[in-house]
Amino acid sequence: MKSLSNNPQAPTARKVCVLFPGALGDFICFVPTLQLLAEGAHVDVYARSEFADLVPEGITVQPLERSAIRKLFTAELGIDDEAQSLFGAYSAVYSWLGSQQADFVRRITAASFGRAQIFPFRPAGARLHQIDHYLSCLRIGGILKRQPVIQLRAEALEWRVDFWTKHKLDRHPVLVIGAGSGAREKNWPEEFFIRVVNWWRTATGGHVVLPVGPVEKERGGIDRLSRHCVTVSGLRLAQLAALIAGSDLYLGNDSGVSHLAAAVSVRTVALFGPSDIEQWSPRGTRVTIVRHPVYCSPCETPAMKNCPHRSCLIALVPDEVIQTLAQLPEVLTLTRRQAGITF
Image (cartoon, rainbow, N blue to C red; front, side, top):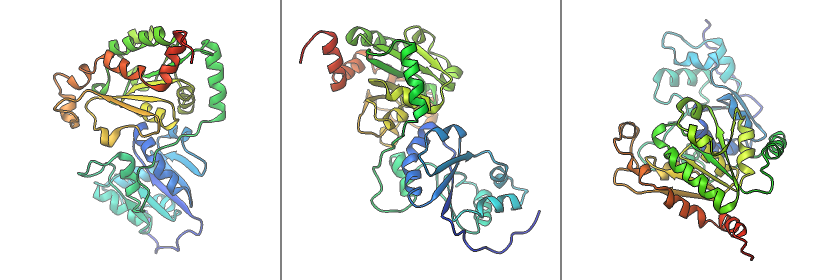
């Protein structure tokens, strides 16, 4: 262990370090902030490695699990050369990790020679959209109300062509369903999704694709739904983005995948129950939020986990959702074509 050297001259190259601990939905909400930071610098964002599929040019994803970062939370350790070497190389350090940990704040400030800024991961008090919270931390005027945009990768688009051909999806309307989420309590009932699938097939003559990710595999609850859909698992995020972007309609829960759908500009319908729409609704030009208002929604996580009735989702019946879907301009075109109505 060595003592810290004196504060060196700031790096001449504009290189920015970002620490971000969130899951998929959080990260997509964070994309506008990353894009803003990347306008004048190269950005290294320390986050989940799979998010490398979603970042634009000028941004590199590094593993958040680096030992130099973990050590910042260890009370008995001082600042070692590894942390100083990592953070001292950046002209600015922005962390949405560890704002409530005094030891972390002290150590990253010292390791970055005072160039670190540490922000709360969630907005405190105010009902602010998560996208706007991250942007507001930068304290730059006129940057709120931005929306995430995810660029599709060429190799993922090639994969989608093969997938469409293999499952004979060409020239058929395609509905993609996001049946999972980060919390089981936010999921619309499986049998309700099945009702929508049956309606889609009859009304449009189309097919339904069900991506199965780690959340769906871990929590289950899609066995019957899977039998009504073309299922696909093991996708990289770039492939999932291309899959959704190639569909005619996406329907899903309050989840990271729903944020991804909005960010690739597909017609997105998101089903909300206990979550706060003002903070967590997917933001995009083609997004529709469907919810059934009840007196106790939105609610905090402890109440959500112990809810005895789940009225906010159980009372959101399939007929109500189908009526909303059927009135979307894109779906009206498909259903009229299926019915043989000429324009």
